[in-house]
Length: 90
Image 1: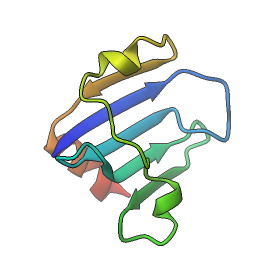
Image 2: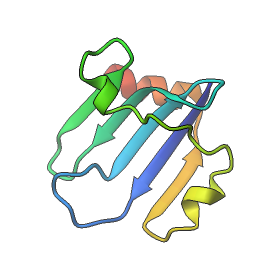
Image 3: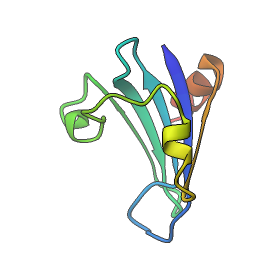
């Protein structure tokens, strides 16, 4: 598993600005946490019925430079512990 924190710099109120993702060995999201500017926090996993609409249906890039080439994004790998801490807060 890999763990990624994505910051998304934007002015949209209905879109998350922080996204934590757990990525499996095939590079698909299996769990995700979204944090919104209004304080809303949502989490999704493969077991949730609506998570198919919230988990990415495409492979996550292995090289985060593919994401970071866009100035509105800043993605970095984080530890499993950091991800689990956030997951368990919700």
